[in-house]
Structures are given as C-alpha cells and as structure tokens.
Length: 165
Image 1 (cartoon, one colour):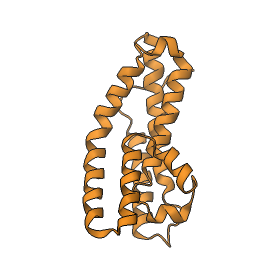
Image 2 (spheres, rainbow, N blue to C red):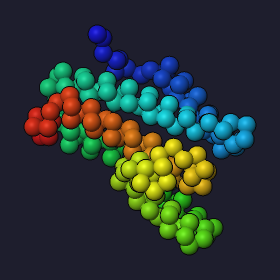
Image 3 (cartoon, rainbow, N blue to C red):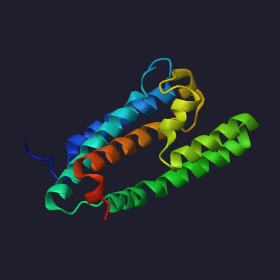
Image 4 (cartoon, rainbow, N blue to C red):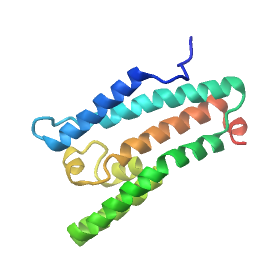
C-alpha cells in the first residue's frame, strides 16, 4: 500500500475549503443549512488523514516520538486557539449572563486541554443539536476527537514502550 504524499495537496485544500464553507453557511443560514456543522468533522477527518500519513512515515523511518508529535501539534494549534478563546471569553464577559459565562469558561478550559469531547459527552450529550446552537466552544469537541484518535493511533502503532522517547 502506498503512503500518502508528503508534498502539498491542492485537492486536500479544496476539501478543506468546502468543509469551512459548510460551517460558515450553517452559521449564516442555520435554517437553510441545519447540518452544516458537519463541515468541522469533515475538516478533522482530512487532518486525521494527513496526520496519519506523517505518523506512518516517521514510524517507517524509526523517527517517531509521541512527545515530539504533541510538541509540534501544540506549537501549531495553540497560538490560534489562545487568540480565539481569549476573544470569545472577552466578548462573553460583556454579552453573556453569569451562568452562560461560567459555561463558556468551562468549555474554553476543556477546549484548551483537548478534552472538550469528553466534557460535551458528560454535560449535554455528544450530538445534542440544541446545545450546539448555544455553546460557543462546540467545535472544540471535534478538535478533541481528532486529538484522541491521533493519540490512539500513535499508541497503537508504536506501542507505549517504544513511542515515548
């Protein structure tokens, strides 16, 4: 079986654009596009495909490190995540009622820890559409699922004793 290419993939960027448009249309026209948030999951499936290719190549070359994998992931995702969560919390401070602001704080913390999927499951149900309409950090659940799946793939592929170095 051939490995995914490590070169730039314009076809993947096209799929990402479609996924982003689905989400934007969902937010702009929720009644016309009720399932548009699926674009987030499509986006993360694409990311999972690309990440799996990277992990597979690094495993084949004997260079894979779980610590380095997370180090790269944090350096890549956290700058934008911190800006988005900070802006959301600041806007929430001005426009949300105390109970909603407390929920936003909890959701933001779970998103920053890549545990939003677990928090959503425990708090409101994993695919609760009504909850999705009112929670500002709902997409953190998709990022957390992606992280969980990639972590599971890493641990499974390499084995715990060999992957942490």
